[in-house]
Image (tube, rainbow, N blue to C red; front, side, top):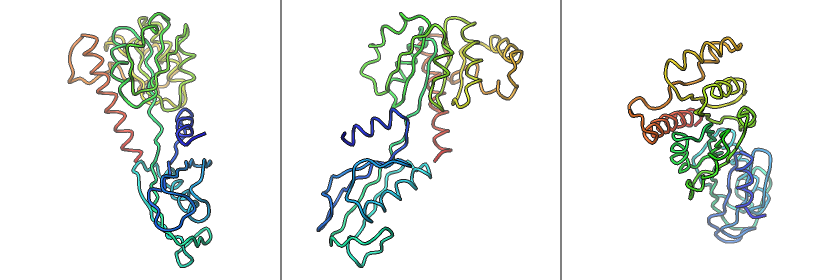
Length: 268
């Protein structure tokens, strides 16, 4: 398995990792420039040469993961018996420069209801580096997704008669947008979203009047007021006005990307 395969497999598992590359080698070293390995918080794949060289790079990579650092950095190590070493001496005589690149876990988003607005929103979000889940109880609405290609996002169609089952299996931190053709279906998805332990933001399309009814019914279903407030309704950027599906989609995408950027800023 190549390092590219490893990175893709870790991405599919949503496991943060650091790609470690020997970018420059001067003199003698265990491996040549261009050699790569991948480190997660508890796994290692491939090798850049072992010994103090490798363990120093791995220790720094894991500290970057612990600190949620997302900015690449370089480090230079001398491989001789006079150089400082934490994990044993290497006397190859050379010097290496190592690049450490954090491989962030992409954001995940889920759209429930791929109707007029949902499809337009999927068009926009498919241009982002995200995991994009598209679910609809009407299987035919997921038949024309080739219109989203070529996409940057990894698209996961999820036809389901009961959307709550799809929602319950979403990855932790997924941003959910509920915009089905049926208010009853919307309500059941809102109920399920509040029962999911680790979702990101939750958005519901609709008017203030719709939301007041949903708020009361969610409270009657046993949800606490502070939990219900996790749901945003109406959704979208209030400065982007219009009722055309494409305009609504732009408004919703703009607001969602703002929220994502705020979350990323806090994590860093």
